[in-house]
Every structure is written in C-alpha cells, then in structure tokens.
Amino acid sequence: MCGIVGGVAERNISNILIEGLKRLEYRGYDSAGLALINQGQVLRERRVGKVANLEQAVLASQVSGSLGIAHTRWATHGKPTEENAHPHISGNVAVVHNGIIENYQELKDDLEALGYVFTSQTDTEVVAHLINDALKTTPSLLEATRQVVPQLKGAYALGIVHTDHPDELITVREGSPLVIGVGIGENFISSDQLALLPITNRFIYLEEGDIARLTRNSIEVFIDGQLIDRPVKELDATVSNASKGEYKHYMLKEIYEQPEAIKQTISQALNGNALREDFLASAIQDFANIQQVQIIACGTSYHAGMIAKYWFEQLIDLPCQVEIASEFRYRSPVIVNNTLYVCISQSGETADTLAALRDTQKRAAAKSLNITTMTICNVATSSMVRETNHSLLTLAGPEIGVASTKAFTTQLAALMLLVLKIGQIKQTISDTQIAEIVAELWHTPKVILDTLQNDKEILRLSELFVEKQHCLFLGRGTHFPIALEGALKLKEISYIHAEGYAAGELKHGPLALVDNDMPVVILAPQDDMLDKLKSNMEEVQARGGELFVFADENSGIKAKDRQHVVYVPSVNAILAPIVYSVPVQLLSYHVAVLRGTDVDQPRNLAKSVTVE
Ligand code: F6R
Image 1 (spheres, rainbow, N blue to C red):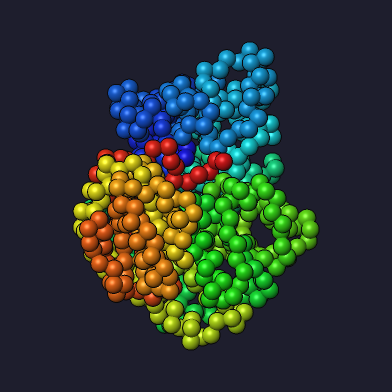
Image 2 (image 1 turned 120 degrees about the horizontal axis):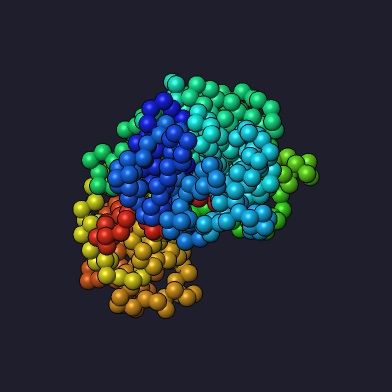
C-alpha cells in the first residue's frame, strides 16, 4: 500500500527520498512523487508507474532540497495518474498521506465553497487545503496541523512541509503506521522503518494520535497538545537482510530462507526437546483460564490459522474458531468470556485484523468480560504487537515479496509452539508428546532443505501450467488449508485462476470443472487420510484431469500417464503442512516467472494492507 518517506537535513535529501521509496516498492503502488523545499519554493516531481520513472525525472530536473516528503501511491480515490499522485500542494503547503480520509467529500464541498480549487480526485488534497486555510489564523505549521486533525475522519498518516518553514517537518499518525528515524543533525519519517535502514537504526514509533515536529536537531512528539516522551529504540535488522542477494526475486530468496527462519522462530521457545520455562511466561495465568480460542486473520495468515485449528482441537482438546478479519469485524460476533483472541499477521498492521482486535477489546471491556489477546507477528514494533496482551514473534526477517512465504511457515511453527505451551499449562498434552513433536519440529528445517532439492523438477512441471487458465488444488485435513494457500499463491503471482478445495468436497461441485485441460494439484502426505485422498485422485483421473501430486516418498503414489509425482521427504504427519507449503510456493513462483509477471510486486496487490 502507500508509502511515506520524508526528511529534514542539512544535505540534499532527494536521493535519500528516492532510495527510501525504492525500499517501499515491495508494498505495492502505482505512482510515486516527491516535494522538496528549496529557497522558498516547493519543487515537486510525480510520475505514474515505478519509482525508477520518478528517479529519472528527478535526475533530469535536478530538483534538490534539504527538507522534503515523498510517497508511493496505491490508488483508492481516483485513478493512478500524475495529478492524483502525492505530494498534494495547496499554496505553500505540501502533503503526503497514507490511509483514507473518510469524510473527504464533505470537507471538499466546504473547501470548494471557500474557493479552493481541486486538481486531483484524491481524498488527500483536502488535507493540503485545510492546512493552508488554517494557516490564515496561525503562522505555526504545527498549530495549523493540530487544528485540522480533529476534522479528519478515517485512518491516516501524514507528512507535511511548508516553504516558510525550511527546517520543519510535521507528521501525524492516526491509524496508519509511521516511524521517525533519528539521525545526527538530521531526522526522517517513514511508514516503514525498512525505508530508513540505510540511514539509521534508531527509531521512534509513533502511537495513535501522535503529532510530531521534526527539525534537523530536534524531535517533539505531542499527544492531545501535550509534549510527551516517546522512547528511541535501536533496531538490529541489517540492511543486507532486505536485499535480494544472488536470487532473481525476493520471493525465491524468502522461500529458500525458510529452514533458517523456522530454526530462528523455534529456538526462542525451546530448550532441547522441551519448551523453555520462560517461553510466554507472562501469559501462563491467562492461558490457564482460557476455555477456547478465536483466531482472526486475513489471506495467507488466515490459512495458518485454519491449520492451527486442527492442532488446537486434535492435540490439546481446546475448541478453536478461525475467521477472516474483514467478516469478523462487521458481524457483531458474540464475545465470549475466557476466550483467547489470536491475531495472526505478518505485518501486524493489516487494517481489518487490527480493527477486529480493537473492536473485540472494546466490546469485551464494555461487558466486563475476561478475554486475553495475543498476536503472532513478524514485526516486533507493529500496532498489533503493541496492542495485545501477549505476542509471539516469528523471526523470519523482513519479508519483501508481496506473496507471503517464510512468514507463513514461521507462523505455523509459532502456532505449534503456542498450542504446545497452552496444552502444557492446561495439562491436556503429556511431556512425552510435547518432546516428540518438538523433536520433529527441530527436524523440519532439514526436511524443508531436502524438499527444496525438488526445485528443478517443480520448474519442469511448471512449464505445463503456463498456458492454463484454471487450476485446482486439493488436500484433506491440515492440507486443505495448504490447498487454499497453494491456490492463493498461484493466482496472486501468476494470475491463473485457481481454487483450493477440501478433496472430499470434489464431488459436491468442483468435479464438474475437471476436464482434459484442468491441472489438479494434490497434496498427499503420509497421514490417516491418504487412502481417501487416493480415491479422490481416481475421481479426477476418470474425468480426464491431469494430476500434479506432491506425495510422501512412502505414499506408494506413482507417476503414470497424466499423473506427475514429486516426492516429498517423509515427515511427521502433524507438521507436514509446514513442509508441503514449500512445493506449492515453488510451483507458483516458477509458473509466474515463466508467464513473465512481476513476481515480487504482483499487480493490484500490496504487502501491508493498511486500508480497508
Ligand atoms: C498472500 C498474502 C496476503 C497476506 C494478507 C494478510 O500471499 O501475503 O494474503 O497474508 O494480506 O497480511 P498480514 O499477514 O500482514 O496481516
């Protein structure tokens, strides 16, 4: 989604802004722009398409300045055109904005009545005009912003500069992430710390409602007009973590990083084959009280939650519901006492999940219900982590490819740790069972490494998908969510229409789609459902469907005419979904590359979905 970078320095920051925007490209966008303040003028460049287009324009025009704001836009109000790209200017004010101003139409009508002329269809332009208007009553840019903020409804983050304030950058966080990068004699803002990592590793994470004023040598943060102290945190993420290295795409790199990412994630919780005593220690009392689990998530994270439901119920006898956050937040679900609400989110900023969490907390408080909230997340500083009672981090490192891969498998590893911890506290699983599963968990990175050896074979098979228009993914049990995940991966990066089904549902409808031209991907681990799955495969073959089977090496499934088999190393059935994620990721990746799509930044999608 949209990205913000801004800064106030002594040196020319045009390059820093452009480099920052490049580091935000992975989030998805369709146009980009920047504005620099130089000798009492706003110098602005905007371009449709890639940041590289903007970079060319900046190189050609040689715009420079030591105070500026920049933006990548993901269109919501108005098409991706140069006129709609940020920054938006009114008089001497320039503004960049993430999020949505919900009451913009009302504000626009009022502003037009006052004579303001709009040059874009965006909601953002109202902010620029409102600040310009407020400056009629105060010379202070900070004060003008303070007057405008209460008029804005919605979720937003803002960066604001003015020609008469050449050493001042104003920023606002209200429902959309914003960090301040603390430098020496220079300070920066961004919607994502990744953008600023080449310049600083010291950050201030703004809270909802914060308005900050940055100069070269000072940072003041205000809430409700009061100056407050927000801590500076030092981050140890390195710049190299966020580069592609020798890989052609971030997605491929991230697929290959999974063994290490899982190892990192489980290491924080385990001591040999036992759970560490200090693992989630602060949650012990809360976990002892819970009687059920409600998972809330979107997209791939929702699929992780679906798998955890099997684990919670089968392994530790704890009822578990899973729901897509965009549905959960709007259907007034009954909030039940002694429930653990678990948000799963790679970014920790997904608008629907965050809103569902906040709504749940509000409604539980209104009824004095005793609930516990927790987040499974890859970003330690995210809103969800900060706003839930407990959190469990996936230590996957930054995930740049829009399609989630290592975030997903580490979510699964983290969820298994959570299941074991709660089961241990509630004594619904024995220490021996825990030790057995943990031993298998330690073994998973090696099994994934071995599975990655199939890459070339999967590439060869992917050639058979290139011309296809549709595809089915089938699995049973915990591999039904993997079928959904495989279909999601294929459609989002290769643009082939794909559906995932529980294989048992085949004859209740989707079998009608199967013909000679329908590839059907089967997930066939060695589990209790294998024989039933083999019958489903027969059903497909009998209708002429072509099978692509990822099968356990001991499954007895053999390649034959129109049945391709890639063998996956034997793995414990409980943890198999972690391993079977990998071949479907590789398949989608190779099909997408062969079809020539923008793998890391597929069309219309964004990495962090911070608007509804
Ligand atoms: C798909 C994908 C998305 C995200 C979804 C939720 O590959 O990445 O479906 O899983 O947008 O995002 P997070 O996990 O950040 O809440």
